[in-house]
Image 1 (cartoon, rainbow over the protein chains, first blue to last red):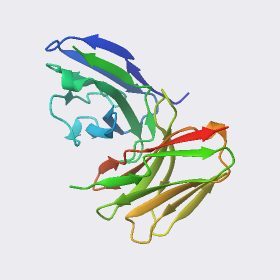
Image 2 (cartoon, chains in turn green, yellow; image 1 turned 90 degrees about the vertical axis):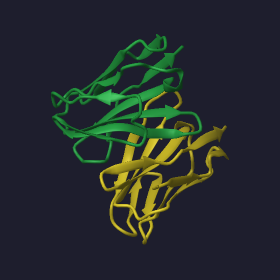
Image 3 (cartoon, one colour; image 1 turned 120 degrees about the vertical axis):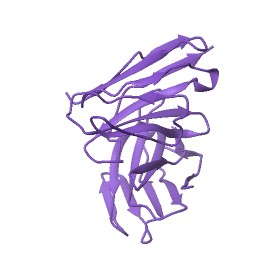
Image 4 (cartoon, chains in turn yellow, brown; image 1 turned 180 degrees about the vertical axis):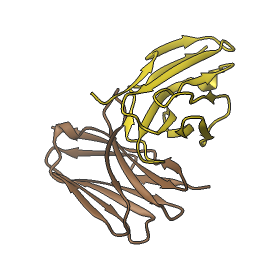
Length: 112
Length: 109
């Protein structure tokens, strides 16, 4: 079954404690991307990757890092989380650049 | 910067009535995508439009891309309770994608 998985699904953490949200896809897609979804602001792109070792900033990259060492995985790293990063995060993948086709189930992050 | 405006923000319709949501971009788009997100769920890709003036249909859903490739619409005919959710458009340009804020559809039985 074609799918994008994210872990964890829910996370409550404290300010400054480094965390990683994993994202994995089983469709051999080249394009992967991360979004955050906030009430009233919709979905905003954080980072995207067009292929292994190729990543670029989206609209709201501040405070986030990503890596793309393998085609299937695209982890999102928060080196020093802050309360304004409390949000619902989605990973997505697709064959077509710039067109997120399959979304993961989401990770709800709360930073205290 | 590039913006994608989506209206209305909310829409309540009686079951069986039609529903339309509109997207407008401040710049010409390469393509536009539409997604549906059920409450508590994740966005689900519905369709991509690429050509100027393109019209595509999926059962009761009709999608249009404007001639100038700056606006788009999604029309649902005879809504059903399963249509409940938020519908997002997303405009693509230069490898970037900008999402509209979505239209939340409520169906009154």
